[in-house]
Length: 325
Image 1 (cartoon, one colour):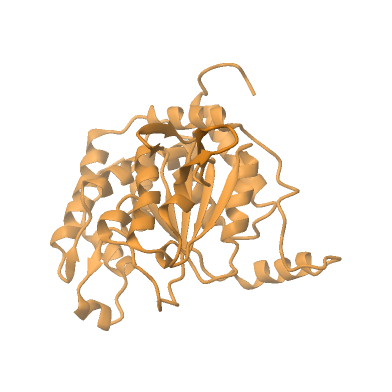
Image 2 (image 1 turned 90 degrees about the vertical axis):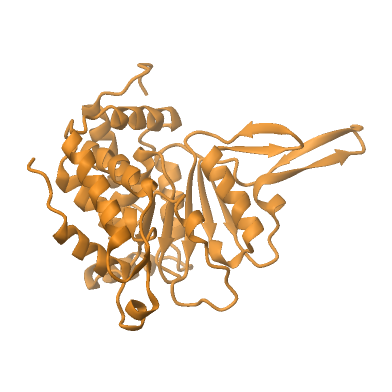
């Protein structure tokens, strides 16, 4: 890596493309998911992954960490998981005669919080505090987590028995909610062929993923994205979309100010990924579903009718005129 403290937008675009290429050496298909994860990484946010088990969420986290030369850790959330199991704790070392800090798995670059909705609210809050503050406080001492720090939290949309759903205020801390669907036919066939070719296990690995940038390089990519130009009309468009969700019929809770901020942050990151030095209204539209779907709450009547947040958001996008580029 270069010793230059800054990365040009052009170089950041190249690095983002290389990141996607390397991640796809392990993750088959899921192009939209990988792009959204990279957008969240460049925007400096966290992601809530929703999908049934077995679609490669753990593999995605490991591949991303390897591609950025970062560390990764995984926490399996369960009803008996304690906050200290997440952030760590202080204990007395009798041999040394002093108190020592045992750091939890959050001290990493890419954290996979598996089935976050299976832990009680106190444990969820311990993780969400780290996500917001980028630090852990133990016995009055503040300890920053490594940078970049990104949480990929998963939840199963089907099996809800024995879960503790995240409150709306906590959901709002996630920059994106990314939906992982079943792979298409060609990708699933390719996956089966690769896994069953001379292997005794059913898991894909990340050995083929090559590092592209280091954590400092990711920070420079984030800085490059933050410097992209956003026209005032594009900012007004993002705010109008978020505000429209609050007054839309059948919505009991709309997107707050963090929703509009998420649209701009992700719009900048997407513009960088696509090689532009400014944000287009189309960038905001492209990130609207993952940036807003977890920030709105439908009325029971709409849920009974089978409506989903994405259906409402598409209607909002059609109703709010985009500024001319």
